Image (cartoon, rainbow, N blue to C red; front, side, top):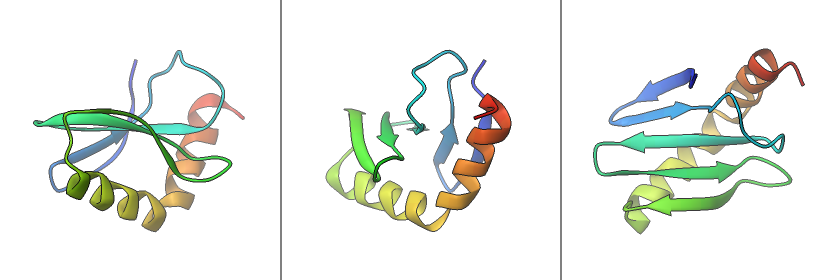
Length: 79
């Protein structure tokens, strides 16, 4: 199960239900996907085929919607 937190433009922000406990978010688009740690700070964990420009856009969106992402994480995972 991978619930979508939200979609902005071509980007889908989501979680995988059975992963490590450290807070993170996955982001996918038709060109690739990435995983960002949310704690202790926002940091790229993995990247598959996304450009530096896309990664910067995604990181800015994560910063802008950080509270919403963390709230969704807590609701989904109960932590």
